[in-house]
Amino acid sequence: MTTKVGVSGDIGSFSEEAGFKYIKKSLLEDAKLIYLIDMDGVMSALDAGVINIGIFPVVNNNSGLVWPAFEAMGNYSFKIIDEMHLDIEQCIFAKKTMSLREISAIYSYPPAFNQCKIFLNTEVSGIPQVIWEDMAKAARDLANDKLPKDAAVIGSKNSATTYGLTVLSSNIQDVKPNVTMFVVVSKGCD
Image (tube, rainbow, N blue to C red; front, side, top):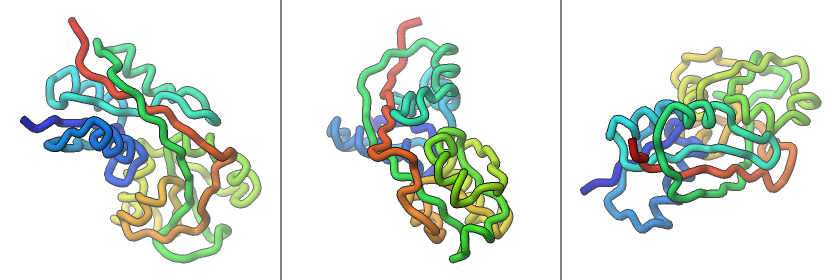
């Protein structure tokens, strides 16, 4: 039987990385990742039996609690079965090589912005920051011309590579290590 593991992110997200890490750690040979974009999507799919296991971020040593996770967890019955820790390296990337000053707007998920405040306030000060539902989805949307061609995204190097985007600057997070804890959940008792 295939174990369906739901993650709160798109292909190339840090949640995907946590999902693969959990599958390897747990020796789940017949596991399949299901990309559910946000925490409520994971918890809803878990509650409905669409997935067997859910994985999403809950806290970062720099930006603190991931509030949407706690809001989603408050609406469902579940149990925590494991936790994963990832050292998150944030990058800024675009469709093509460009100077940071050529960027028209920066898209990402709020925790990414919160983890890169120094970079945002010094290197790209004044450039609008646009909240997107998931940083890897923002990368996909940029690659698929759903965002302005001179926009940039803050996210993982893996998402930049996955969608054929150009990394303009790496390791832009405020602190190193920049560790995020992800929880692994299964359906709870009703």
